[in-house]
Length: 324
Image 1 (cartoon, rainbow, N blue to C red):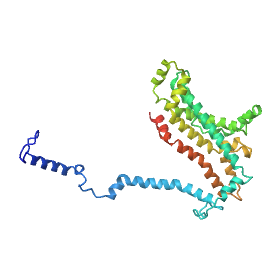
Image 2: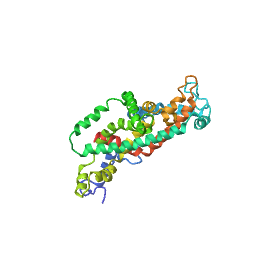
Image 3: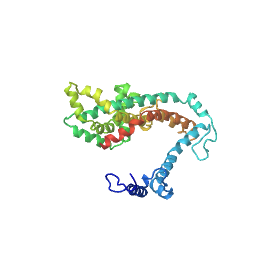
Image 4: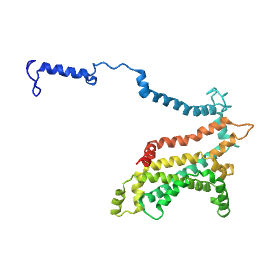
C-alpha cells in the first residue's frame, strides 16, 4: 500500500488519513499524549474555582482547634490560667494531672466512674427503647399512631431545662416511696435522661426504619418469624448506622450535662465530671484553672475514642433517615 492507496472503508489515501488524524489531535488537546503542552497554571482561576474553599477550611480548622490547644497548654502549665497572660506552652509539666488525681479533696476518679456508668447505661437504654418505639411506629398500624408521632415532635420543641423544677419535685416525692430511684440517685438521673432523649431519638430512628423495605418483613413472616424475631435478628443489623449515631449522641449529651446532674445529684461522691469540675473554678478567690483543664482533657478521651470507633456509621446514620 502506497501513500495514495485508499484506506479501506474511508475512500481517502493513507497520507490524507494521517494528516486528518494529526489535525484532529491538534484540535483536541486531551488526545495529544504526553508530548503535548500543558496549560500554564493560573492562580486566579484556581483560587476562584477551588482555592477559596481550601482557605475557608484552614481558617475554620484553626478557629476550632485553637481553644483545644489553649486548654491543653493550660493543663500542662502548673499555674496556667485562661487569660491572655498564659503564653502557649510556656511551661511544661504534669503537676496538674497529678494533683487532680491524688488530691483527697477532689474525688476525680469517682466522678469519672460515675459519669462513664451513667452515660453508658443511658446510651444503651436509649438505643434499645428508641429502636423498639421506632420499629413499632414504622411497621405496625394501631390507633393513635399518627397522634403519637406528632406528640413526639411537639414535645421536643420545649427544652428539658424548662422542667428542672418539676424534675426536682417529682424525684423528691418519688424518693419518699422508692428511695432507690429518687433524688440523689444514679438510677433517678438515668430515668430523667431517658425521658428527655427518647422522643427525639425515636423520631430520628423512625425515619431510618422507613428506608428498610417492608418486603423483608413479609418474607420473614412467610417463613414463620414473628415481630420479635424479625426485629432482633434482621432489622437491628440493617439499621446499625442509626443505632451507632443515637448511641454516640446520647453518650456525648449525658457525659457533658451539667444542669440536670447538678439538680439531681447532691452528694460529692455521686456527682458527675461536669458538676465536679465546675467546683474547681467556682471559688472566686482561687480558681484552679490548671487542674480544671487537666480534668477536661482527660474527660474528653472517652468521647474521642467512641467517636473514632463509630465514625464510619455517623454520616450514613445522619443522612439516610433524613433524606430517604
